[in-house]
Length: 248
Image (tube, rainbow, N blue to C red; front, side, top):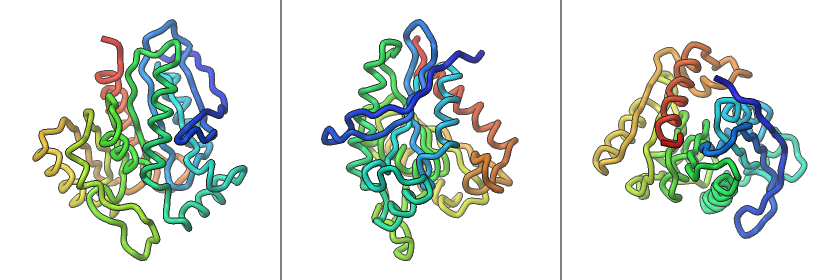
């Protein structure tokens, strides 16, 4: 079943009351639907990510994607903004958590909200999804091939982010992990390291690693796209968010 939706670009008060841009897609429902924080990938706040945000609304969730690069390159194209942020070492973790905390509050305040909010991220957003779930009180989190969760980035990458190992014990909600067996960041070995840490901390999680898939297998605009794998993974997402975000 799909729902009618309303989608628009908005501006809202994020961390430190900074006004930032976001893309909001809401399902046309009477009330009591869950919300989803969509974190864009490293290439930026682009049309592909906005399409994913609309997809959540069409499937019965309110969804918001914050332009995490709003402050760094206002008015720039997604490519130029991503280049500027990469050159600066990436989005600071504290700012990411602050912005998503404000976005979660925005979703909970919508008149159709049931008060539940989950998060999903792709690529760098996968790591940021885990970061958010370890830093905020959320109801569900999805990590789509997030790199540098259990290891620091190579020095040559220029990224200033660090491993999330010290805070993984703070995971506040169930975690769904979707990974490619042919990926390097994260590699299957890194995924198994994450599994071990979560098990040791008695966290609830469900991991799926897909043969024949590498990084960015969800991305319809890249040669890395794997339609059959992406379809299977989307089915896992719908079941997971249905279990954790739906009104009981």
